[in-house]
View (cartoon, helix red, strand yellow):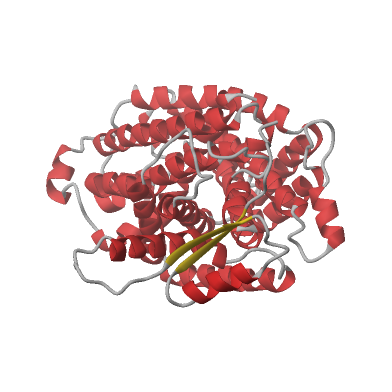
Length: 499
């Protein structure tokens, strides 16, 4: 695969359920300025993360597992598995979230059947059926079918947005905006951010296809960054259109207000919602099993049978059929819950932890100055640091209880991984390069001081070709430098080795 699947997988996940179901509610609740501020705040996390992902992807050969592969190869397998499981849960639960939102497109039809035929059909009947059909198709046909379906649903999504922007206001909002003002209910700002934040998280969906890409170093940066910027621009214009087309009361009371504004909205917006949600579900359904498969291939789970089963692939493309089936079962559990807002807040926590980790990797690699960290795409260390800080702080501002539970769960999971795999690198790997740089800078500072008279510190170098015959010279070097300075011993091998 090339760059196009990365871009379309990402943009179809970004322009998903939240756009159609919750952006109007957000504008009605916190106002135009409030939602524009939320879009900027959300992208203060996602844009640095997109840059960090692009940077890390151009430093190494990115194999299957996307972000999990990057984290595990930068921080070690224990931390990689810990964050990877969190990432997998966010992706798998996202499948359920988008299927639940997909069911909302059938609300007018269900109401029509209940009114005219006195037949009550629960939404779970549609959501569970849709999830089973989608899961079986992807399980049997794999990523190629998913990508083909994406092109179709992205076209429908584009038509729905075009009809929305060409639509007309449902009421005169001039008098209402003069009374209410562009910013309101500031105390609900971060609660609303927790609900709409999944709208900004789709940019990493294409990264999960890393194992199926012809050139991940090229496709991931281009597809991820362009999708992120495209989504942000569209969101700005959608918010402006919503604010100018309906009163706050109408926006809050009618989650599907876009269908009243758009041309032929009664049909095109439900179709757009169905396309957006099913495309987002496809994107999540494609990447979640691949993340789980990559974790199993690294033998991070406690059971060898479990690692073998989930890590097994089929065919030349190594389709993760077992991991896909497990993801389907997990998604079914959350589909049964049926609450869009509750599932959205859970997803937000998992994504925030993953995004904070990616930004931390990028920052530490910049600060640690690892000689092997030579990327073709260059971000800035201060962007990564800002992304890490924003993600960490926003977690607790959005929902302190969920954030606390998520952080505790991550630490418990890490200590479990550390206990199971004592031979793998852990937290010490994160700070190794940083501590080296701090020590180096302190030594340079001491050596470049302006004091004229200083206590002499030995910095001895010894070169010998008789290392294994005469070790007393090593002892002498040790006596001179031990606890007083630095000693460097070189074993010299004589000969001509250019061939």
